[in-house]
Length: 279
View 1 (cartoon, rainbow, N blue to C red):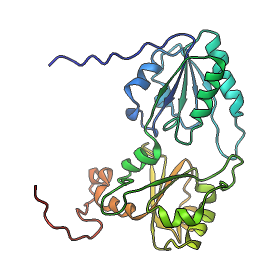
View 2 (view 1 turned 45 degrees about the horizontal axis):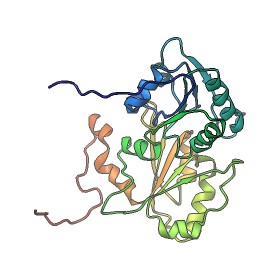
View 3 (view 1 turned 135 degrees about the horizontal axis):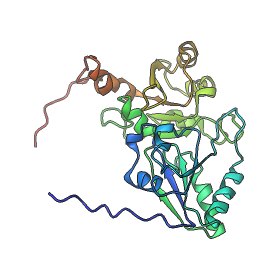
């Protein structure tokens, strides 16, 4: 069989590619992302982009850190956007590398609009969001027909680092069977209390995935009522993804990494009786 012609695009000078780096494992990069890294003159990267991903850039590529981490001194977003514009105006091929997907709590939309305002051509290259791919690596699907047909993604802190304003916690508690929280570790106690106040059960399963998809990955299974104390006791550190809901129980059957290390998986982790399907 002849190899497929992928027809990967050329990275034109004076343009910007907004690229999702995925949840961490460099093997989860898209072909477009790797293609861009191998052509870029400059890579402007976030704090969550690891060295193994950056090593895929060409050797003479300039690498500029522009990471934003909660509670630590960080570049101003407007300055990052203007730096992208300035570098592109200098005729460089600028790759803006963002953890996960640039359009999922990544401010990629803000940066793209700044490029539009400056007349800079750009390309969007989606990445695997940690709220999906990171949980999958942990053996937790965000949807399953026996547990939920909807899932809600929520940021755990606002622009100033506080619990975000504007969330209808009553509606979230009642209407979202599975909640995936990004950047929530700092406020997990407050978030849990708000959900409990509006009717979620204290025994509802919760999983916390730190350093998702990386060799340093740590997974804590807990409950909504005890998650804050359990996270503190375990010394879990960000970056983390938190998932709340019955899908967490599925890890007993889907922990593929645990299987490789001798874990015995449960083919019926939800304990459901199912008739044999035909047709």
